[in-house]
Amino acid sequence: MELWITLAALFAAALLAGLFGWLGARKPDPARGPRLAPYRFLMLLFAAVVLMMVVHLVNLAGFHTGRGGSGGLGQ
Image (tube, rainbow, N blue to C red; front, side):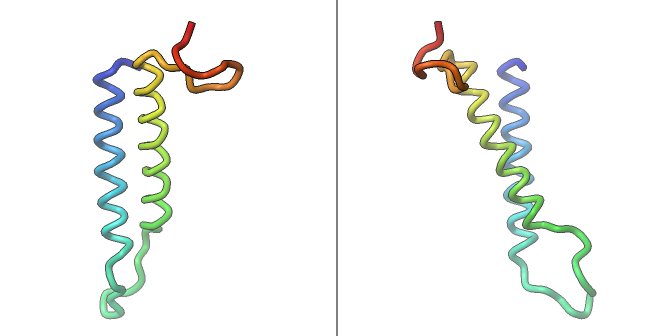
């Protein structure tokens, strides 16, 4: 994935994680009925995507983050 695609995905996932975190933290409104979307789960899902995009950015910068290496700069 190219750098600009990774940055766009990182920005979108962070925005959605924040939005779902805010929606999940609101007080329930019994007059409107139950919430039909699992906002906290969606927040955690997009937070995990943010973490993966940050690791991908580190890999794009030239650092090796996977298994089978000593870490640090890739060869």
